[in-house]
Amino acid sequence: MAKDAPKMKGIRSRDKGGGRLRKKRSDTKISTLAKRYHRRFAGHVSWQLGTLLKKWRKPSLKKAIRLKRRTAKRKRR
Image (cartoon, rainbow, N blue to C red):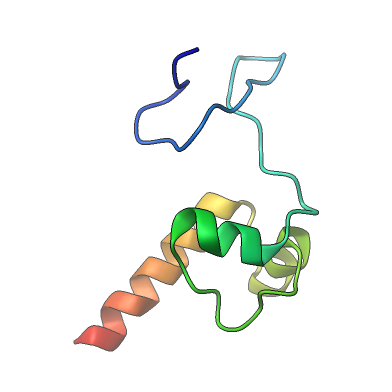
């Protein structure tokens, strides 16, 4: 089976309405995501994704990873 979207790790299913890629489950552990996306989430590895998104006020994992990249670039300068 081919990947659904370019630059996407693994195979993710699509929603029934509109064919969009489904959202990541909110009960996924941050430690799992840190390993998969090679990112650190400020020591919050025991949290679940839903908790992290609420605390950071982000609607999705994609937005949280983008935020993380921007802050990392700023610190390097």
